[in-house]
Image (cartoon, rainbow, N blue to C red; front, side, top):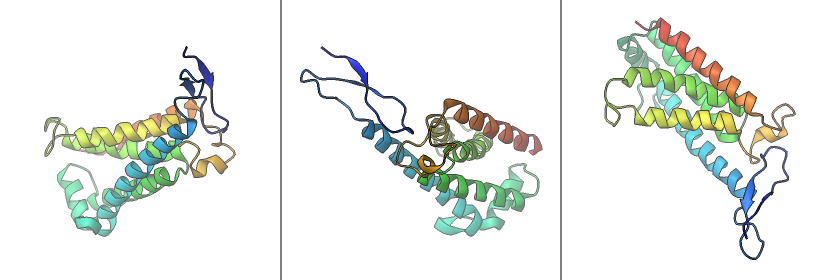
Length: 190
């Protein structure tokens, strides 16, 4: 008969209720939860860091500051090169923060803010690529989810006293800050 019981010991991992099979052993492990968060953080974080390096350094076929600045100017943002630097730094630092699990709520919020602006630029092109925004929406949702859940136990945040025990409130506040910042930037757009 299945029952639920707490099955975690780490302070950074929320209590995970696991189903038990007929023998009484746990069907899932809290380590599975943490491994899943680690995989999500690495893929999303390194993807965003690579996008930022395209903007700042022209790596991976990117436009660098000048090319990205021209794109920002054509998209209605003032001071295109400055916006390219801001977006590039936000993506690199936010992405690397997510990848290693450092200041995860803020790193997630940085990505959310950047991606909300990317969605605004691609809005009206439909949902699917090449002109749609499904990719940007997926990155935004992943970053917000990580800000809300926390990084799991395989993260640098585990060693930071304030973030050692992630709280939903940290994630909610961080996502709201990311959305507010995105809104301010969008107000600057023509």
